[in-house]
Amino acid sequence: MSDVTHILSQIEQGDPKAADQLLPLVYDQLRRDAQLRMASERSDHTLEATALVHEAYLRLVGERRVPWQNRAHFYAAAAQAMRRILLDHTKARGREKRGGGRRRVPLSMADIADSWNFQETLSLDEALCRLEERDPAIGEVVRLRFFAGLSVEQTAEALGVSKATVKRRWEFGRTWLFRELKQGEDNE
Image (cartoon, rainbow, N blue to C red; front, side, top):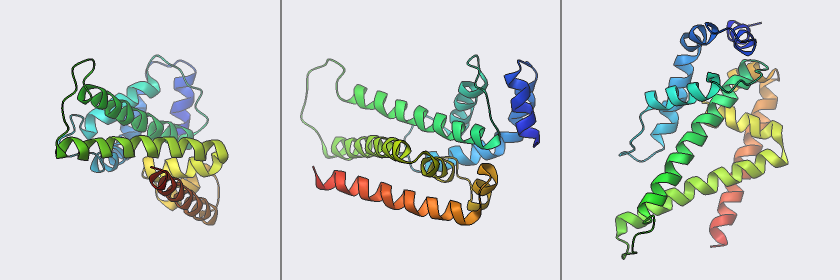
């Protein structure tokens, strides 16, 4: 059992000091993941990678207790939490930008560019949810590779499968998402 898995087990059992021991072990990986997520966001984003890591971490080990199965489960949940935080932030920004009850005015080119980015984020999230419903194992590989930033080797180790299985699932997942997103564009 890895140190991370052991500490996650302690957190699940209610050890209040275990969460303090976990952060130093997972922080670097979570920070890399957050930086990858933030790199695909707009340059004037109000969230920073550090804030994203801390908010996701608080959601994971805060008052809501999650029965962690292993390190892979934790990293997958962290990736999901970061994704949700960024998506919530994007939705909130979209609501603010779209008036929130104020009178509509004509759009500028900047608004059109931003709304495309907003819609693209929502479309990706919806497509990933459909993929996870269709095949949870492939969805888990996509989450770990794309959202958690794990390598093929790290993903294989975390999931307890071969590198070939991860590569196969990753390739299928990427292709499936690309087709779903492309099909969505064609239907507009």
